[in-house]
Length: 138
Image 1 (cartoon, one colour):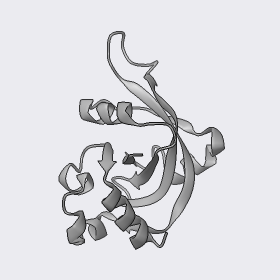
Image 2 (tube, helix red, strand yellow):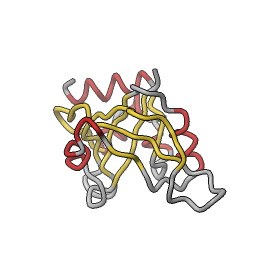
Image 3 (cartoon, rainbow, N blue to C red):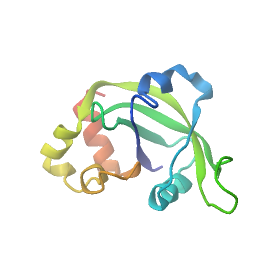
Image 4 (cartoon, rainbow, N blue to C red):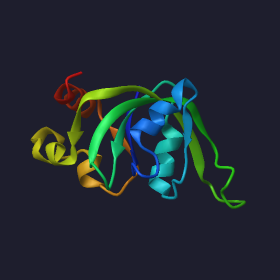
């Protein structure tokens, strides 16, 4: 199974909001970047994602999982190819991992969070997942 990272501005949708959505989870909307959309479309049921607070906090704060694979975004204009994926919170990281820490870790230098900072939906390699999980205390 693949791993991913999704970004959200906490004032719009925070980790606490995701946790409050409970087991029913919520859809991930607002993606209007084609590469991010393609990443959403690759996600499979049960795959885990890091939840990252962007703009405020700048840190990986939790783990969520895919509970519904990509489906058409009902608010997209007709003919636009945008999709939604549903996620549910799994658990918070014991210790959030800041962007500064990620950038300071040589083994993470090629991580999309470093190389494609603006991309809101990113792949995470198995090695990156394991390293960040360990750094957080999981």
